[in-house]
Image (cartoon, rainbow, N blue to C red; front, side, top):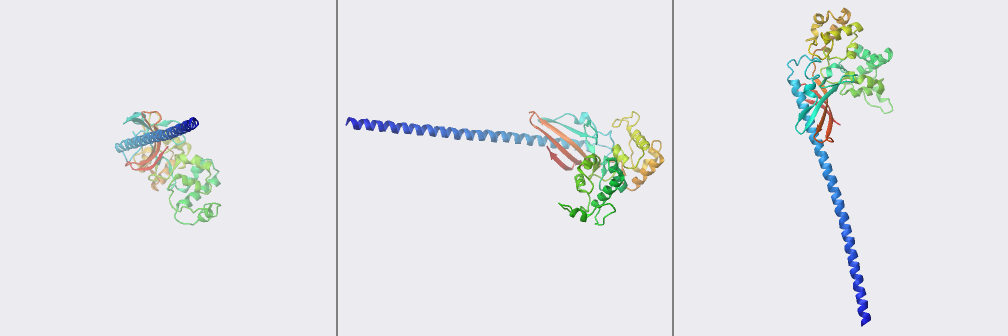
Amino acid sequence: MRLLLRTLNIEHRTKTGSVLLYVVWAIALLSLFAASIGSQALFSLGLTERLTDQLRAAFLARGAAHYAALTLAQDDTSSVDGLSDAWANSPGRFQDRPLGEGRFRVVSQEPGGEALRYGLLDEERRINLNTAPADVLQRLVELAGLQEDEAVGVAAAIEDWRDEDDRERPHGAEGLHYRSLPNGYDCQDGPFEHPEELLLVRGVTPELYRRLEPHVTAYGSGRLNLNTATPLALSSLGMSRMGLDGFLAYRAGEDGREGTGDDRRLVSASQLSSELGLFVPAEDLARLTALADAGFLGAGSSVFRMTIETRLTRPTSQMTVECLMQRDGTIGVWEER
């Protein structure tokens, strides 16, 4: 009997120990499960907070774009645009503006320049790929570093790319050429939709595109705004060095600096002779007049680009947006970074 009781006692302790072991394992597994759920919850919470911050920053950027649109709407000379306009460079308006739970600034950078401007850049200061005459395109490509014979070919290829027919110009390229490439594609045979399409045009290398990109556009009215055009864009019109210097002196006003209150602005491309006669040689003036009569030159702008930088109260909540906007506030390009 005593042996039987001892055996039962041992079995009881064994079962108790096993149950205890099972309980310990169960608690350990439940703890691991709870820790996993907690970790996932914390991750989800953090992700939700980051997404919420991005959404808030995006709304802040939209508010900044609306603010820029209001500045354009307040321009009382919307048919004439110059570098001294409020939209062009106004630190007081665009440098560090509070909005809601954050702040924003609107900046832009002159093509080929290093200094930031607080404001917008108009697209009409650039050569329009869809409307520029062949000789303007050729000079632009030469100014970007190509020899004359190479520039003739690139200009012809650009014309072939944008026209609606499939007749190949001398030194140009149409669909037959592009389809014969290893990774062949069709010729556009229509207007450039984006400046990046230049990379598809025969003769345009990535290096050439890098040099051309700050000075070309596929947006806007198609006319070059003489009041805002870059020096390189003006040079591509065929102006002499003396003519270019005189024209820039006319625009800069008495203080010799563009973007200040005494800047001179052309009200219309039809007033070139009366306004520029004392500043630009006759042969340059004749060239400008011919381009104005052909409808390639103007005095106003219709599409503007800007970089919007926002930050919320927390330093990690930031956003940069590249925006392209029409004068009426319609947004054409919106790229968040």
